[in-house]
Image (cartoon, rainbow, N blue to C red; front, side, top):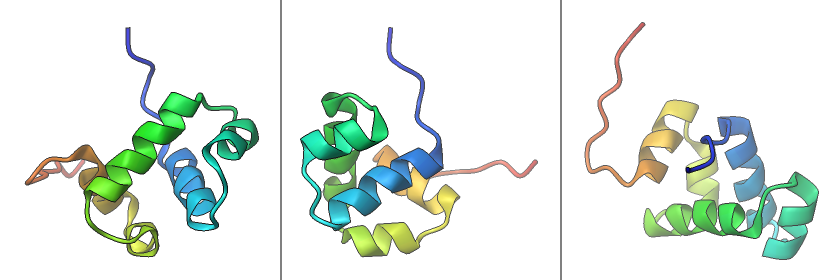
Length: 78
């Protein structure tokens, strides 16, 4: 069974540390996430073709959409 999705502030923390050139192993230790989880979110970020700075400037909804890999994201307003 897959682990639950991380909260957006946790994903941002991973991306911010990577933007600072912190190694995967150190990010793993600092965040207590598995190396595979860290690697997955960094790969998703790189797959967008945007810089980490550009991704971190997005709002939570836009960042989630960008990292999802979906061509079009549709969000319901609550």
